[in-house]
Image (tube, rainbow, N blue to C red):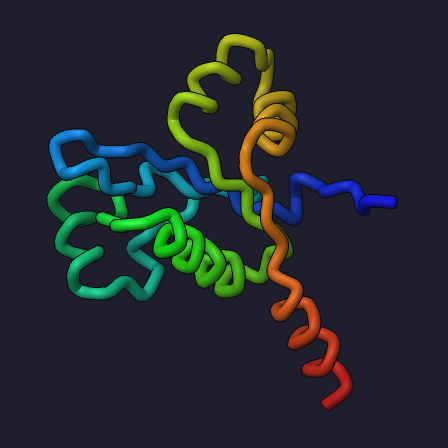
Length: 130
């Protein structure tokens, strides 16, 4: 039996592929049910900071693995259990069908790539013991 994912435990990462930059990935928006993530409060590498300051997005990520690793780091920093990574096309498709934000989040969870970080959960369990 699979555990149902609660939207309040998810960090939503919306990304796009930039054709003018060799199809690299950029995070356009990250949010949870608590609100939009403010990247000004996130420790970014110099490369990401420069891109964020000039374009308002985070990247470039050369591979999906790089994008996912950064997303996991954000998830851990904001103490959420799951990430839902969606490309802009899935978001645009879901906007047509969603009547409100809750339905949009449910649609993204159903159609995006939802990943959990089991190591974070183990760390959380042991940190309470010690």
